[in-house]
Length: 541
Image (tube, rainbow, N blue to C red; front, top):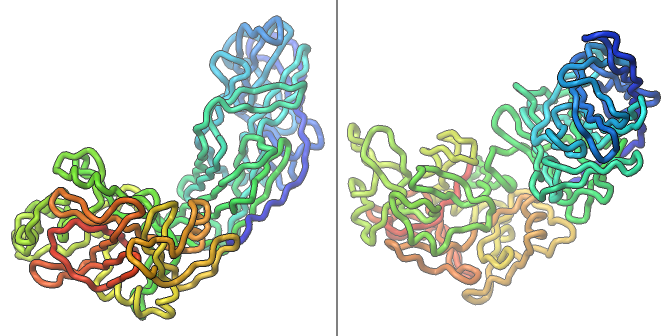
């Protein structure tokens, strides 16, 4: 993965509010001046870095007789624009008492405490107007006289993105808090934010109906100052066509955000995938490539909800024995043909259990039959259902056919060198590399092939951090999640034992094709009884 470009330019900003005498109601109370030079902070960003106020800006002023005892707060607003703006009282009483704390923008101020700041979970894109970009960088001021000097509480991130896609939103996440409630410490004019919660590690940047990035576009958002650097930082770009792309910092990288700094990030040549997809591209025929879902398919019966597992190595395991029509937990082992697709015909039940393939044959108790045509449902759970974290629409995801499993694992170019058994953080399974593969630096070298003995999943060993790098490079992992027969679950436990993954291809009226593996054996075209509950790993063309 290409390293994220971090270009940091030091900048300074001082905003001065000069007190004016209140002549009568509605007249000027404060005059706000942005001192020169000023390249980051408030409130419109010009192409040359100059900051200006804009009409409608609001500040909250806390006031009292001492710096530690605030007795009230007032809301002030301006109709002025430019480097200097005049503020009038909008709500509350005229600030008095000789000690003032001021917060911009007003909506991040605490309701009671002057040093309580609430950074929002969502920020909003504004297109440039007249060479300026509207931007609400949080600021703070304290004074015991008539002048308020504002200081920035955050650093600004400018993301420059070039892609043929139109972007609808950007999600930034990290291991450290990016939003939520903070306590402000003034520190003699060097304000800092201390989080009061470990939550708020994700910020969403919304872009309305979409921003065209074909010629490049700039997105400005703010993050709390973190001079030690954010870790585990990821940028996810969502396009208006339902695809997304991610960029993740390497484990040893820290993204430093300083006060009064502008932090440019430049992204181009992004690879976009369907929402819910992960890994690279995999050939399943001479003319077709697919991407895999982010995890195995899961179902919750009492809410009739389908989703993908959060991680590739996640599986439900022995809890599949709780399968029932009103079970509130999740299952991920399904009888063949029980997609749950309902178009006004017979009920075909993802929660069904039987130890007899007779119930899953065409016309059986648990297999779909169209009452008008007599046609039987194909075993394509994801095709007929909306996946809550996979685009939430039908006819997007599908199950591989028998021939596609076989081509992927046996016939594509260098197929034998692109698969191997192993374990991720102690979970055994099958690792499959994409058509185009570059081994990540700092990661254990991938060893193709199978182990020499059964139940030996040590052929490839990756920690969660190492697997994150493998996954970012395009690798896919299928956990050995066992199988279900009726309400009994077998071949799953420490490190997993066997993996069974359905295809959408029937073998005969009582059996269907599946892909089977253990640590030292793989069969891309096995066939088993339809009543068995196997894993399902959807793909998208």
